[in-house]
Amino acid sequence: ARLLVWQAADDEQALIDAFIAKESEADSAATPDIFLQLSTPFRSDSGHGHALTTELCAMYEEASQLAVAEQSVRWRCPSDRQSTDDAEAMVSVLASLRSHLVASDGPSTLTVWLMPDEVRSWEGYLLWLQRLTQKMPSNIRMLVVDDKEGPQYAPLAKADPLRVLERTCDL
Image 1 (cartoon, helix red, strand yellow):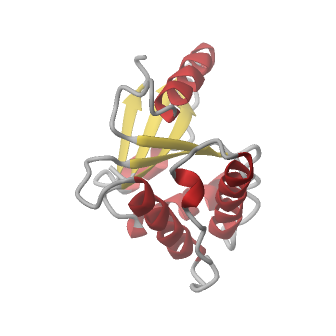
Image 2: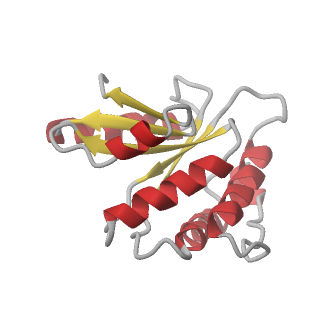
């Protein structure tokens, strides 16, 4: 799946936060996957990928200044402006990061937890996610958390069951 939709109750959010934090630390991770979290608000489908890429690059620039993540700080964020398609540009930057962090034949998936601070248009956001997942390679995955009681990502799973996987959170 290119997009994993975890359906969770409100009281399970703390468990998800703890799981992602644990898996984000190389010393405590139980899976070979690499996790990172992006929270850029979704304002429109034109340029959202560039906004996420800007957040990602700023995150790694800050890490390089603090010398926190030894291997990852040597990665230099490539320009995402080589493509006018923001989803394609984002996939290119994520692929660059993954290839820096993992040996080419490594089993790790780069998992990006998308947790936008704000979504102005759910219809636009779902269309953007669908467009993004169509361009992603199998070693990159997006993760979103959906409300069990009022799922908003369900139309994606119905529209593209090969790329979108819904699962109930059972941490």
